[in-house]
Length: 244
Ligand SMILES: [Zn+2]
Ligand SMILES: [Zn+2]
Image 1: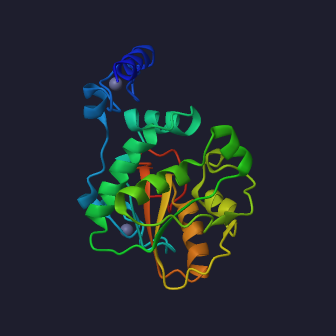
Image 2: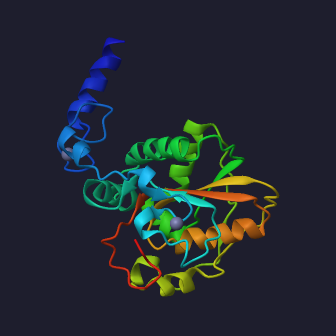
Image 3: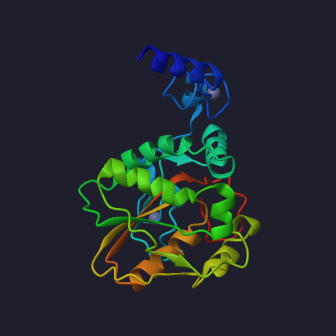
């Protein structure tokens, strides 16, 4: 018992918990220091149109028909949250997913109150990319959210034929839609299912839309999207149909 505690102290001294925002040492079990936590740019979800997942004043529902039914995110893709997501995605800081999953699960409970989900699905990524990163970040988030909400993960419900370009290479909304057109498909029978589609970041909504289209084609009844971050109006994306 004493030795176990001693080894815990040694480990936490050698590898202290550090803030996902600024790398300061923080108390065990925390994700951010107080300062970074206070700086998180949270989405005020009551000001959002849940149909398209953007601010009501920038609602895209009249300019584009989405295949998903609803979409929402707890945080903006900026500042501390953006930095933390980057570390989770590209720097193998897997533990940061726990923070995002908690925020996302809370957001689902608040915004999709009373919805009975049959399963959570995630956006597939190329095998080489998952190997390089150590995991598919969307799958990790889906697993953790599912655990919190008590819904099953439907593994490999979505498959990818592969994209020509990564989405962030493309600066135009229409190019992004074109790049993911017919890329995703499903070999499952999702007849009548209400699904929670999980991804890390929503920018143009093109990937979520293409995934939702594939889920509906496999029989899904409804697709609710949840992403950790949403790219706000400062997005550099060009295109008249991108209002956020
Ligand atoms: Zn910090
Ligand atoms: Zn809308």
